[in-house]
Length: 452
Image (cartoon, rainbow, N blue to C red; front, side, top):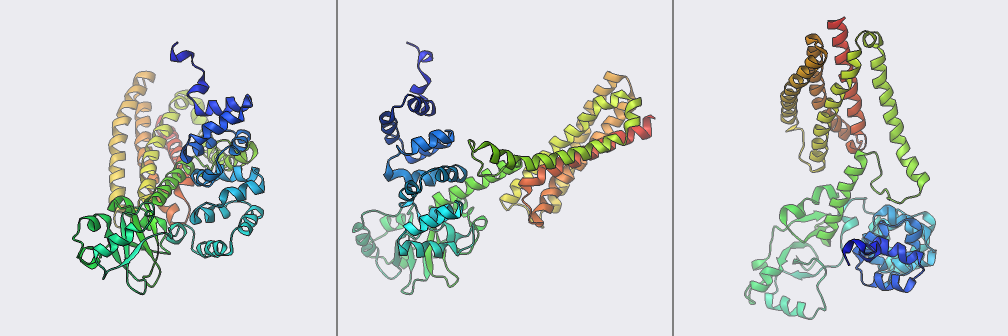
């Protein structure tokens, strides 16, 4: 029997679970979920409609429900928790990590957040409240409070004997935090140095004194790149006095990087980065409606420019045929510059010191591409309509719009960033308006001046 005759449910987890649900086979669903890890189960939940999510949730082993919640995107997680019975939610979150629980409490309705807090021990509530006092996106929100600290004046043999008494090391431990008697951060002893160093040596002799550290109030955008630059598994977090209060692990950094990437991609389309693929229809429609309305207003603005040249269009029908080419080429060129600028801002690669050089580069590129493609479209228009003047107008308008696109593609995100507005959210709308207006105005204006 060939593979093409197999039932889809035999190799597609999504189809399998939906099929088992429809056939009412809960035990097979339970057995299947027990074979999956938390990442696979989270991906499965994100790929199912809300009704199936609620049904499947009850079959997820209680021991891994908290891990699954931590892996879910915020939008999916919140929609799921709001639909589940309160007792089921409280049972699931008991094993969640502190940082994840803080994030969850601030995203769910107040009623559910209050019930969750009431279910925690007094010590857990105090720890949660302390973490919530740190600003959003700060190291204090993300830091792990589980680490191993040692002093610099002990020998490596003493450290090794101490570690052997532990059941396990905290996840992503690539080194031990070195502190003095008062708890001030001194540096980091890598596991490599511990294992290869002579046992009689002191920690102070082999530790990294200049190991990276971040302040508890430092925002993620200021330190997340350190993990890639230093290729490290963890970075110490210190308070204002320099005392060790926690550490940031690489898995948290990767989560932040993924969130930033999702944020940029979704906002380029005018969507919330927490958008649930299977979210309810009405809320999803409302979220998208606003930016569609903004786009409609800008479209009317571009159309009003065309309306100014109605008499010109009536006399030269060829203009209506060629007009979209100018706007389209400008839009593509501008989007290329806009994307690079937004990425540069996100990575911290653009500053006042290099903006002028970048602007010159983009203008020169626009000039080269503008001339090359102006010649191409000009020749095509000449062969098509047998009118050299019309071809010249089209070529000139294209060059003008290429320059406008390059300038706008760089200027718009810079201005929005300085104004405190997310350029990924509204940059493309403004850029499209600029390239459409300049493209139509230059093409139709030159045609009115030179051809009529």
